[in-house]
Amino acid sequence: MRITAGFTGAEVLLFGATDGESDVIVVVRGPEETAVVRRKLRIAGIWVNAERVVFPRMPSFYHVAANRSLQAVAQPDVLASEMIGVQNFRFEPTDPAAGPDKVADYGAAFIRNKEQAKLYHTALGHVRFLGDRLFRTTVRLPANVPTGTYNVQVFQLREGRIVSTTATPLLVGKDGLGAEVYDFAHRYAAAYGAIAIAVAAVAGWLAGVVFRKV
Amino acid sequence: MMQIYLPIAEISVDVVLLLAMGAAVGVLSGLFGVGGGFLMTPILIFMGIPPSVAVASEANHLIASSVMGVLGHWRRGTLDVKMGLVLLIGGVAGSGIGVGLLGILRAAGQVDLVINLCYVVFLGTIGGLMFIESVRALLRQRRTGSARRGKLHTHIWLHGLPFKMRFQKSRLYVSALLPLAIGFGVGILAAIMGVGGGFIMVPAMIYLLGMPTSIVAGTSLFQILFVSANTTFLQAMNNQTVDLFLAMLLVVGAVVGVQIGTRLSSRVPSEQFRVLLAAMVLAVGVKMLVDLVITPGDLYSLQPGLEH
Image (cartoon, rainbow over all chains, first blue to last red; front, side, top):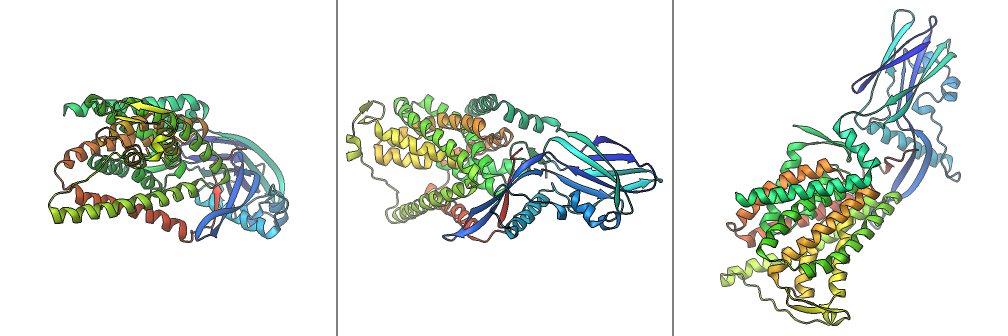
């Protein structure tokens, strides 16, 4: 089984081939990040971020696609052990004192927020077969997508059991002026600051000169 | 609708809307001689720009507008450089502390709350005072036919503190500690609230220092220019929250707006407009308070951008 990735703008097209008739699940995970989930409480009449739970090593982006519904292609224990689908995420907070109810609440909030930012797709994507063995699927990457090395896992299943797994790294970078500015601001923070000052000062000076004559 | 993606704020905004906002606040700046940061930053926040990016980018925008203002005052000689430098020393120290504070608050997840609270307190107070003052002036004007403001330079005990310094241009001989402290306080606020702080510094210079009104605006702009530059640099260094695209769009809008405002200022009845400005300041403050008080749609939030 091989997969190849080609970037077509904000949509990634993934395709590959199986070694015989089988079901396919494709999981795309973004670079891992530390997720800090906060909960607001009303203190003295105003809402304040009061409690937090930290989940280390969470995928910054998450997308699952399959050729049929997940329940139809895989046994529940397979989905759970491979952490396929957001409902099978295991949340392990840094603070071991957090109880299971609290972890579940904060975990759900994490997924909700990620979904709202369009970084997690809880709806299942479609894997389409072109013939018996060739398949393809597309993943939409929003503009705020984190850059870095993504991991594309392809599971080939028969009768609900995994028969083979392939993992392929997918490098996601951003193009264009905006991405370069962002990159520069983080990599050369001092130079960026100096340029920001210079540009603003020149703009102000120019405006002063131009309008003095008007 | 023309959308532009702001690289640091990481959201797309409507260019025309942003330019219009910049122009509108610029008109007010020209009309009233205020910096307008205390209106611009909340508007940016209402537009959905993260508060920490809004404050840092507004500091960057302020450089441009204060350069423009300082040049004009420099030519007219309405600028006390010595006083400006003393205010500036305090301001640089204050903005350094303010930027550091923002970084700590950001890590603690309280940055949005503190920025909003500062706005509620300061906009509420300033707007309230301005409203009362302008309504009084309006009433007085009705009664006597002309608005007159009596103001004396009185010596208060604060002037007698040690390290006395002579400020020829301001015709003052006062303790340097006083302008240092004013600059320091304004510097902290400037960094946290993304304002120049003119709306606090100008009254402080008039009423606490007793400076002649004619040179107050130029001197405060001089201080704001360098404090904003310092803030911009520190925010870029420590927090990477300066959005140059955002700041430049605001500059373009504001430049045009300020010119319109300055020309209008000689034609419109300024007393009536002061009431309007006061009402707007109060309205923004109230809106921010409401946002803090009403139950948010989702009690949980996710802190962005913590790479592993």
